[in-house]
Image 1 (cartoon, rainbow, N blue to C red):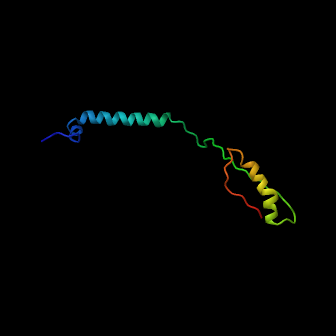
Image 2: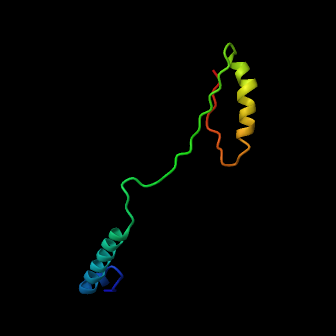
Image 3: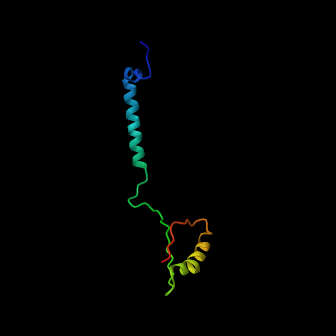
Length: 87
């Protein structure tokens, strides 16, 4: 019968057990050394612009306020367009 890579670990069980134990120990060491933080620092960048125009319709606010603001704000590459509303 030809020996394959599957029978080698069975025939050499001491070496196989040593490799498994070493991998387990290195895994525990990696988990122990991994930086942990209950509340990791991250930044949520979000913005809201509110403009009030008493007596104006949604279309007027869109044309006179929202569109000029959008044209200016969205020229920055850091700003991603998500949603705009005019009511």
